[in-house]
Length: 237
Length: 237
Image 1 (cartoon, rainbow over the protein chains, first blue to last red):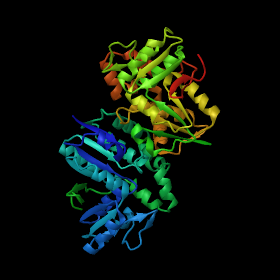
Image 2: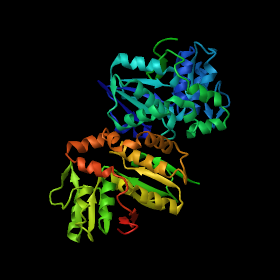
Image 3: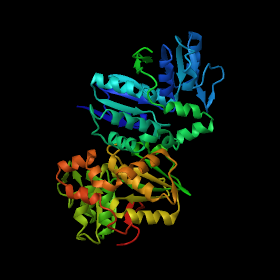
Image 4: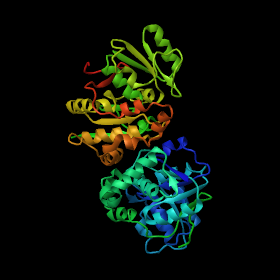
């Protein structure tokens, strides 16, 4: 049986062994959810940038550019960081450059992994199927919020641990705790995560539709995977 | 209403504000439990050391010295790190020097707090009463295991958050998650924490009696508090 563990912050990832593992990077509100929505709606590939101006420069290379600061689309950018912007398939065939701090850090700090997947609720089952097919140990790397534990990434981790019970043993404390948490609160994801500090921050910006989307299960069959520092869909939409 | 939050590792404590707060340091297996048992059984004060040889030198200053490495009492030391060693009141009136890595680090990194308490299940209610009397914001600082999240410290955090519901709002994600976890698993502490990675390590050393003791509620009325870098009982036994 393979094993599964959870790391709650990019600031703790150096304490975990990544080699030989599938690392699932999670930033539910909203970076990894936006990536999955974009890929499922025809975006060819995604480059992520912690730095806003680096991201902006990708515009001249033909990239669609997306980014927000303080909940507002950045001036001169095509898009904010909303997953909902992609769901009408308007940007199909384009390349996306997006700026996100927590998510970019978590991806770059996962570089030693055997494979890096991008986790989100809208493609949870697809990600589970991929992992069960590839039979490797799994580490769920929560992007967190400025280095701190957050509820939505952790609860996604719990969902994944629970769903992989038959193939991946949770013999590590973070995985055990999050499995229990998901068993208790997973039936009421939206109600429970409405309390989360980042959901409250987002609600203040009037983007309840994004939160709803980020907590919706299994809309898409694609799996998001990092290849050569770009995020791509493993199964084309 | 005051607030309560949880930090899961000394490696994340720099992300939390400590000033003005009561910080409760927790290292359930076994450092903080041993401290509480020692103080409740008449030990006058406790000095903690990360370094074994520094601890050993306290012997010549008249301290009782306690410490283990790899589950074995250190050669030349009076005691290991077992809380059960103190419960017959044999060492009453003495000063204790103990060596512990995770616990010492968590205490030293809590230095900016307004007050530092030592958390353990055997004096949970006494600690709750102290906090409710002093009306400050609370941060629970889990010592963890070599920087990583651990189940027993986190579940203690959940117990404290749950017990302080009426006076301290959990509006931070770590506190919310651990409250939920305690609501689900708190009725079967010993069964649930038997799965914890550190409990398994301890079981391998044949110290089930320690684990039982560490998970027993409300044996003592004392509160452990750090004053001038020493741990003392706030209410004398």
